[in-house]
Image (cartoon, rainbow, N blue to C red; front, side, top):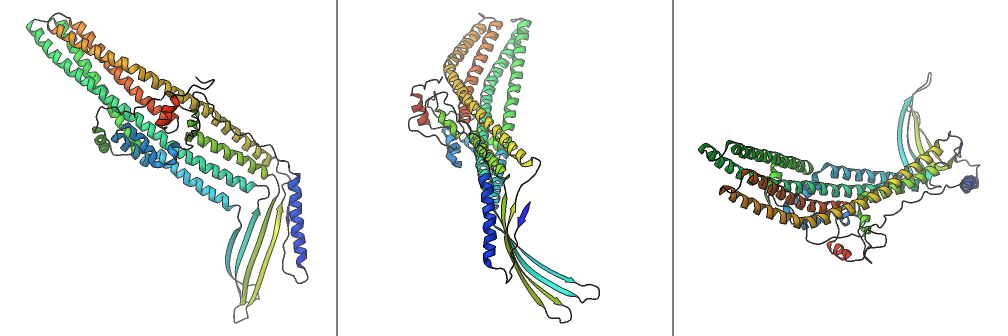
Length: 500
């Protein structure tokens, strides 16, 4: 139902009557708002549990990845002391589609926020018209006019404010998603880069092994032709040389695949990527040397994916308020001013008409077959969904940090033993080779020693790669790095009750 009051200038209508009508309309709306029952607000999402290490007394973790500074991301990765890695990460931050798309979504959210804010302000439209008309037996008349129309919906129940708050929360969520895209791309590129450097190291090991096998095959072939070695041993050495060459080609193809991945992530031309990778060949990037045994749980508050879900939950909560407010009356104030000029053809005098109008309009929802109530239920269900996503993501974040810490600790403890094993088996292989050349050892024993030494060297490279990868996983798990000084001090604190 719609109650409209149109006030036009009339000499016999006193101004007091207009005030009485406006007062009566406002009183009716206030009476209806007093009778409205407001549903209880949904509960806010629970926070992140402290699951591993007590936070530092008085310390504060950043609430945005890298403190919200664009250059801080590159500064964090500079601690690996690998200019090629920093250059590639910077290129990915500029060119990668995920980051660019996340930035575009920020612009969309900003436009939505401006639109939501403008909806709470008066709207003014202007118009210009000109007509030429006639009727049977009547002269032609011409008319022209200009008008201004204003409309303002008064936000009595907070629907407009709730919509603007929801739009602001969505903007903050999109900004967090942009930070999350930056951190994710940096971590993914670093993982791919480390895999490539590790692949290069394995290629060098296999190249050395293949070269040694070729020399052994040539020497053995000469002995076989001279009758100093059996054909079976010659076939064994030839097969080992072919197997080494086979493994080398396979490993080189894996390195080429890693390069393709780096090209896709950075959007740089492949020749430029290969030129960057040429510097520091087969050297794993090493993070700054400091120990991290535990991290305060409050570091998770900087995870941009958690920030994104938390802001989405806040927006959904305000959507519930807006849907609830839509169930109650709406009051709008409309006004219009126009001036028209009418004249006839043939020199007829022109006449002017000035009109204006102003007045409130009250819209009362009476029956909508449950549409507005369903909208409230839908908004609440949406909030419950995002709230659950936030809480589950917080639990997953705790697991990811702890897994990264476990892998980092395991890789550091295994590396020393792997290094000892690699050196020991290499020395044994060299001794076995000398014994075989002197005729005191068999080619089968030499082949077993070679395979064992090759496996030990590959295991060492893989463990060293796992250690660097664990650092990168920890970077991603805490949402974009941490302060080395804070991490060192935190490791010295006693564990909190109930933590691992």
